[in-house]
Image 1: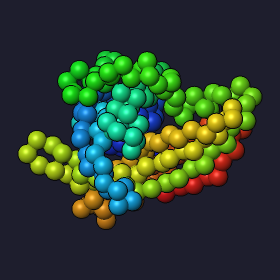
Image 2: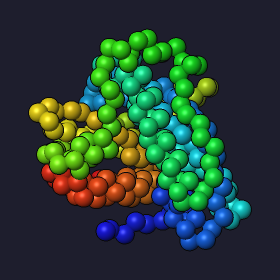
Image 3: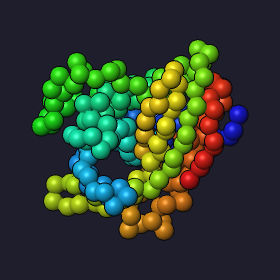
Image 4: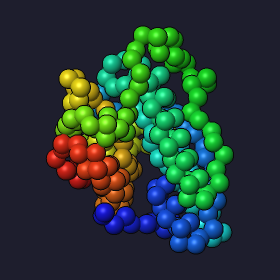
Length: 233
């Protein structure tokens, strides 16, 4: 098993759990943002919504705050539909809640909700298959099925739109082309991001975060005998 590093102040769920296991007093609460972002993907601009959870609290009475992107959704076909994205986001959010609770950290469970957005479900679940995430394919492999994954890593520029100002960001995206049960599926996740104008100050640190998250996934791939080529940022 590869060593997992613990950052303090924390920037990942794993950091919070690791610090708690080391004896720190950890508190945690969440706040959600569903943020419109203009992406410039391979010179093909498009707008999407990213589902952000901001974690904040204290470590031994010292304040911390970090954010995690749980999904990206579009109202068109350039990336997963917004209604699909909110379901993906909530699945991973509940997985992180379980990790926090199992690590002894109390957390109030809130979920992403589209009620305040103009984009609604609009019968999406009736028209589309069940939403699968990467861990569903890991479970399919654990059941003895052959699964192969092609991993693609990319830096994708985007502009987040806040009330009164814009924020240029670079998103570190991983794309999975998954072949199993006679079909090929596409799935993607954002592993980290940094302010574009602060690339020199933030990029290396965010690369470490993204790669630590990839290493955890790759370890699960290995345990499930998934065929893949290991790539890191």
